[in-house]
Length: 67
Image (tube, rainbow, N blue to C red; front, side, top):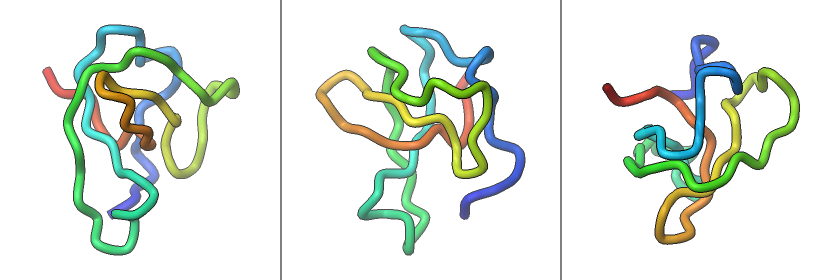
């Protein structure tokens, strides 16, 4: 489910609603929705998605931004 079209770091801000893939869900591709509280990836892009922390403490890589 990981795609080349993951959002760039510049598109993601604290408070942005996103869908992430958690490490344990990578084989199945199950996405988790939440609100970003912290950005962990420092580089502008990442092939698997920018890693973030969501409210509630879940950590995952952003697959898409939810409007």
